[in-house]
Length: 366
Image (cartoon, rainbow, N blue to C red; front, side, top):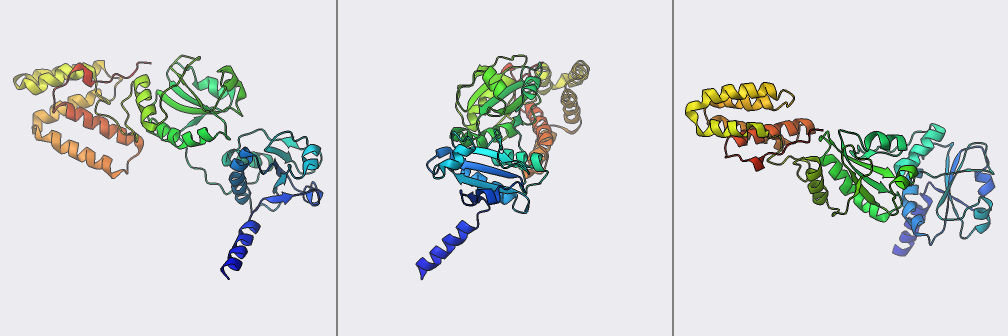
């Protein structure tokens, strides 16, 4: 009984596929020009075909409500004549049959990830998929124009991954790379980007990309770049970008203890703490310094903290730090507001310890 039930379940799972299997006996009946169709020509032994298979199933599921669309596949190893008829020379090969076309389909050369395939069908037909795409923090540079507009700009450092949708190492790197992009999402001078080298072949060729993934770092104003040879953990990328972009990010996106500190205030902060008899004069100097650093939004906060301590005493520091840390820990703020709270916390802590020149991270003046 169990084996019968197992066979029945297997039969149901096979029948549940929304990808149409094409053979010489049904090809002309299905691909008759009445509906647009995307057809994959594959071979059972092909590794790239096996990688594409679950994605292709998801694609068919995403358009299952569209009755005027065909998503199909052909075992072109078994049915060689069909492959030869449509000039298939490698696997997998994807062909697009617009409505009314049965003999001369278009070759599909885009990405083989779910989003790229679904976007292609939507652009061709206007049909909407049921895919709910997650927000990505990685900036896509999939045209030469987009690439050149970002890479080499005078005010942005750019880390670029050149990848191919079928590349196994690229797929393994993708979730890590997404985390790194999220970690640096609010660093205005630091961009984490990628290029689908099968789509933007011009940029990949220009930068001598010969394998995947290839990662290059482009400092602000540099259009040539340097190859990234470091480790591929989130921590490795974060450490690298902190050094290159003058940032102090932590794994997970938080800010380190030096982020936001302004070195011009170091002497005044130390004097304010250590020479209480001269606090009035120190606060006055801080007020003047704020005017000369008007472009830095946190300069005035140093002055406000000095005024607050002068009025309410040292206990203000611990109380305000605890309040800010409670807000950050709640996790209900936007990334921008979290940065703001953490920088203010760092400035408050600067009044609790002795500062030296190594305590400050100076942002690149790009």
